[in-house]
Length: 330
Image (cartoon, one colour):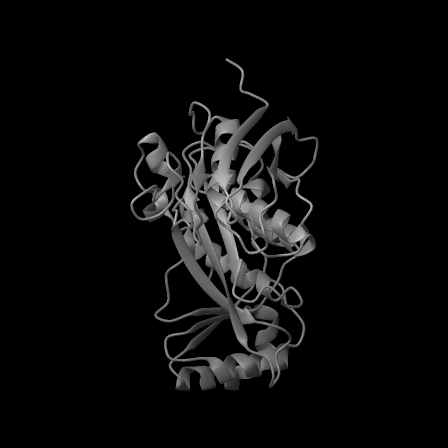
């Protein structure tokens, strides 16, 4: 039996009106996997982020089609109770959840990437209400356990800008969910909420390349990347991103405190680690903020310039440094 080209879900808005969320399938043709057709740009971005994150714990990723999500009438700014309806419309369209029409749902979540539903603002009679006393995780729709416990997450820290007295360390967090069957493109399985399109593609390129170096790292994970500060400069984040991903996937030993890293690569598929700019300022920042138990990873090309004095100063604080030219050797 062929799958439908459209699916709908109703939701109650804050003013009492009932809105219809519609999911429509069309050929991918090189376009984004999810598009939101609403007049408000901020709402469209938020809806796209919700739908993509909610797909995180699905057993199989199929990104061959584009799913277009719309809602009519449009909710007021700041409303979030439509989120569950958008997720369910997307799942009904793609056959992840089969339910007879009509479906009415209200609910929201701050952790869609775990498949969990935090709560709801309205609970109309007969509607699926998210949160306590209702639908608390998406797996319950199909009689499955809470998959959130299967998600592993790890963080790594990097200089937010270019070092210096006014800079600070910030973290990138990678959460991974194992999938039994691979499908679609590796980069489509990586969600990075809150970043612009250029940086999003850079993050996906780095992770996909570094996982190719693993040999068995490709096609096995659904991934969410979260930056504590989405506005950062340069490519210094790359090594920290790769290390957070490797820690989350069990490819590295977890340090006593933090992994702090600065480095980039033009060939992550080969595991190469290359130098970034502002070595002196970034080393000074790392030395200033390091604490006992931290493990610092820096490009081998920096070792001669930083000197043994930098390593000795870290050791005096109970931290350590490794100068590397390849990942997997820390």
